[in-house]
Image (cartoon, rainbow over all chains, first blue to last red; front, side, top):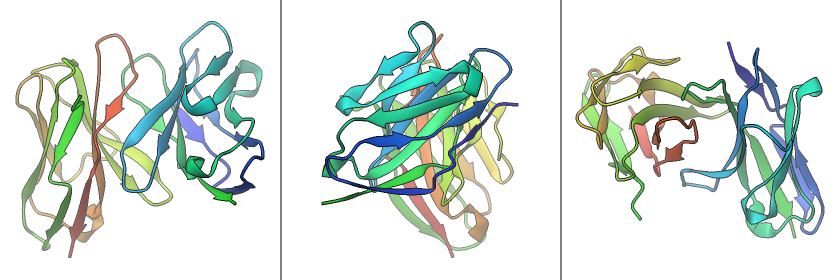
Length: 112
Length: 112
C-alpha cells in the first residue's frame, strides 16, 4: 500500500528566508507525486507534480520540488518565503491509479 | 471558471439526521472523489468514481453512500449522522489518464 509521511507538523520561518518541507513516500514502483497548498477555509490548490523525467520540478508561486528515488523523498523548497505563503501544505502520492494518498500536512507560519 | 462546486459550504446536523452533500464539476472529468479532512490526519478517501456509472470504496467508507448521478455530479450521503462524522468534506475530480485532482472549496459539517 502507498503511504506518505510529512514529519514536520508545524514550521515557522521568517519572511525572506528559505523553506524546505519534507515528504517521504512509500510505493513499490515509480510514483506520481504532488504538493498541494491549502489556505485557511479554502480548498486544495496544486503547487506542482512529478510524473517522470527531470527530477527537479518547478511549480507555481516560486516553489520547486526534487524527486529523490534513493531517499523516497519529494521535498518542497522555496528560496525566499513571502508572508502570503503561510498555509498548510500537503504531499500526495499515487501509483498510476487515480486515488491520491495524502500526508498529514505541514502548517507553515511566516514571521514578519 | 467554476471548476468543482460543492454545496452546502456549512452544515450543522443533529445525531441521527441524514443529509446529502452535492458536488458538480464542469471540466468534463471522468473521475470524481470524496475526501474527508480531519486535524492531524490529512485527507482520507471516502469513495470515488472512476467513471460515470461506477463507484468504489476508499479508505473510510463506513457510514456513507455515494451516487454518481451523471458525468458532472457526484453526491455523498450520510444516512444517520454521527459526531464522528464531524469533518470538512472535499470533492475532487480528475481527467482520464491523469491522477492530478482538482478540489472544491469544501463543506464544513458539524454533527451535534
